[in-house]
Image (cartoon, rainbow, N blue to C red; front, side, top):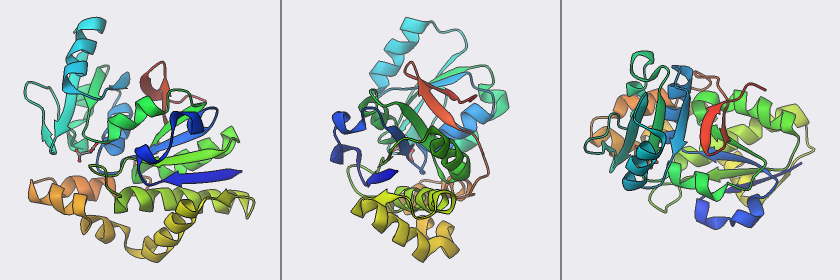
Length: 242
Ligand code: MLT
């Protein structure tokens, strides 16, 4: 099995993703919010790129049981129901709701993977559940990190490295990695003892703390605390029931 990791969505073409298992990673915070939303009983999360697209989508599908969610510069978009703090996605807020979500980086990666075989959302909160699912799919895997504003991000790379570590334990040495995947694995091994601290000290972690979301960083680094497998089906992210 081949595992290729890309530090940023722009480093891979749509064509390279065809017929692959694609794992989309945005630890801070889109992946974590999506996992929490589905665990809290949301029917689906529809990822869109821009706030305008979100309101158009709500007009298209009708407003009943639909919430608009998302952030720009980390802060809830004006007139939207929810921001992108995973703490907002409680059962009370999202149960039985369809959530249309737009974030600065994370939700942009979904459009790129529209021709892939299986598209899975991963954060640290569900890394082992994702490892089990993608191993079962048995296809070559592409790990696509959202990064942050077009730059490499520590947290997504560590999470990708952790997934590779889990897959290596399952598959032994029968994995072929690209150089970025090897680097992510090494980076993970060097930081496995203090993942939370490494992420909190990263650019995005510091930035979120400055605007009052330090507790989101802690929540997002609780490994395997939300063991769900969100998959993309008909442009919607739903819980996998395979
Ligand atoms: C993103 O998609 O860029 C992030 O989820 C931003 C954030 O921390 O809200």
